[in-house]
Length: 340
Image (cartoon, rainbow, N blue to C red; front, side, top):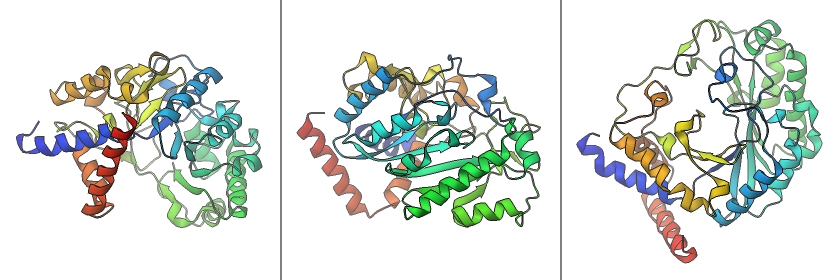
């Protein structure tokens, strides 16, 4: 690591390890799409396909309740699948929403099978953010998504947005589009989405993830390219600290964009405290390897690298220095009070 950045990194590392880490739950690692631009079809994580069982969810809820003393936003993960492939998706969300620690729920979906669930009931839950992945134009949808479900998916998104408007837009809806260049901004379906979601909430992906070389230029929308792989990765990546992911079988992992055995730091059935697991030997050893320049193979060619020091700087810019210091002080007092 660069000598001049050591103290700055040590401060950032201490801050992110000491805070209450955001929680993500993986309901399933199955997907309804067969997108050419996604690593799902390569089965890179090597796990069996399936959904989180009720016992695992209950165990996760128990530990999260002990971990979070204040209400928080719970994210439903889609690192390797789509949440609508979980038959109990609606029931699981309702169970989470009923918990003391749940301030809101966020999830990402391709919306292909969203019509399997009672959207009216879903809208009554404390949804915080819902992110859609879509491809406008039927021909492009079939080619890039690998399934013939364009009209159904479009209808699902528009209906979800309509119901959200009826509830005064309680959930923030956004969309990422996978489309060829040039894009027809006057297309009728795009104009419908524009009216439903708002221009500022729709973006076209132009720089793509090659998923460590698995995806080629022929797999992504035409006219686009790949994100560059930063070679200088001396400062540990923010992915090591960003989020605590509880996978479908109870494994706990770091990194929000990859699912890999190298990122597994424990299992909720082996611990009575997420605080102990998060600060445990496996997590600290993974961080220490990065500090020694010993990166997991999957990290060496990952295009999502972001130094944790930059993330800490960005976090500080969100408020005044005084507010950040006071927030950090309150956090430390709270840790002492609860003996954690």
